[in-house]
Amino acid sequence: MTESGNDVFTVKVDKEPCIAKAQIVSRLLAKSIGLSDVGSCCVVTSVSELTDNLVFHTQKGGTLTMIAIKQNGRAGIEIIAEDEGPGIPDLKHAMQDGFSTNHGLGGGLPGVKRLMDEFYITSEVGTGTRIVTRKWQQCR
Image (cartoon, rainbow, N blue to C red; front, side, top):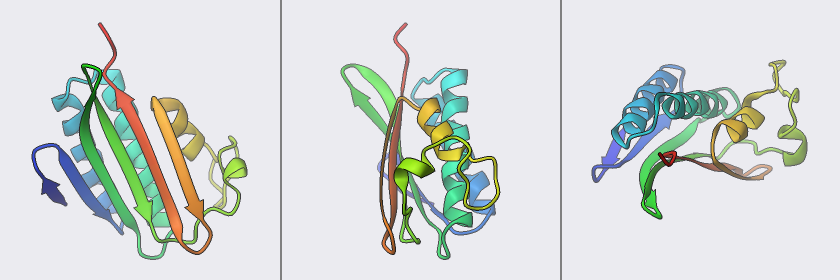
């Protein structure tokens, strides 16, 4: 894990123990910026899914970067998952509930999209995948 400044953390994710490390860092960062318990849980669950994908769908893993962000007076967390894996041939299909390439439940990426406030994905076959997602502090 590397730290850049006080609010950017990058975890190299290439084996299962890295999933737990990313979960811990994401929970601490989410709480430090004032996300609610529910918001923090959404972040940690999303990080679990994204890092699981990095471990089990790529040969070399990838990176997960977590950034404390601010916009319009509210705090949030941005999570970027990047890999140089096989890519996703059909993003529309991959974003449907129930679709799985490894006999799982097929709720991973659609679940992350539902749990987070913003979700963007790009993927190119043979080049890799990049997912950017954000969770914002709720107005009180």
